[in-house]
Length: 220
Image 1 (cartoon, rainbow, N blue to C red):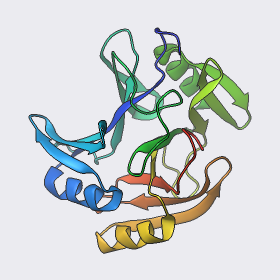
Image 2 (image 1 turned 90 degrees about the vertical axis):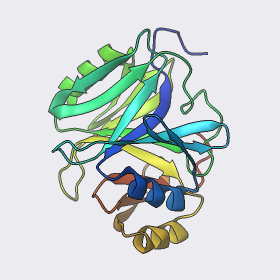
Image 3 (image 1 turned 180 degrees about the horizontal axis):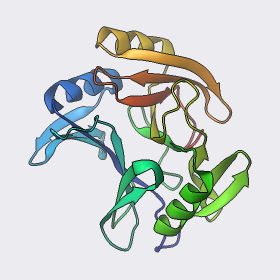
């Protein structure tokens, strides 16, 4: 088991959006989630594991996924370089290298896209008690040599930075069709050096996610 002081996976991914009903419908149809209304919005489940929460938010900034890391000594909010945000909570991770194999609809990997590699490595490793395994120009964030996340350069298509969450969709062709039918868009189809073939998508609000076909474990 990982050390108790380290953050060793995700509790869930969280999306704050001005229209949580429409947003939840998009991802429920795409990822086959079971959705339950809660006091904070909509909780989204695959079997007995909650994988996401969609919450109302009328802030001026564009909606985006916000990762909630688990295993921290205390609950808190994190604001990293380039306005990259995340949360941390106490308790067990639901998704990560020590969790069961990712099922369809669940997060299966996360990557940090950044132009400030040194600052990002320092902030996230110190904040979450991670080690940094360099493989220039990329890096892997680890706990006891198990990969938690990757750090890489800004996305080539648009130069965007921030956390990118990958979800297991079973197979990619049908997922691409569903994305378009639901009003989203497929931004690119590419081959990831660890995960294999992936889709980069945006929902109707422009929120970007990545899709993977049946990874055998967290991170591929």
